[in-house]
Length: 175
Image (cartoon, rainbow, N blue to C red; front, top):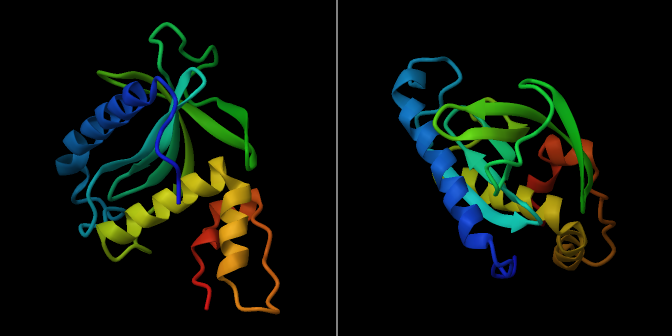
């Protein structure tokens, strides 16, 4: 279980996540008729917290699920251009994020977890996957410990690597 937020700027990070989610909620009517849209899902900001000087969390939409980083200070935007990739070292390892810009918000960096979202039957499943992905990225030792303790005796745990994370290996149900 993820601990309660402790960073002094976590409230700012949650507000930033909700601001980004509001932008995607406004895009739902335009996206609804596209073939990548899962009508069983809604937009949500999951687990946003402060990590140093950035807000970090997961955005779930009916068409994608992304890890998202964005500066908490408006003047601290990425120096690279929109569409360029930047690598960040996180507790799980190095992950590549794509720099983007949202009208009405500013710069964000995204790392795709799922797109399209048809593997999710409902919002609860999508949000559970988002929370699990965030835990796997930010607290890999704890996630590994929980996986080990939940497995039957004699079963060997698999190590979660970046490829496994991005392919959804952390979502596999364990007996």
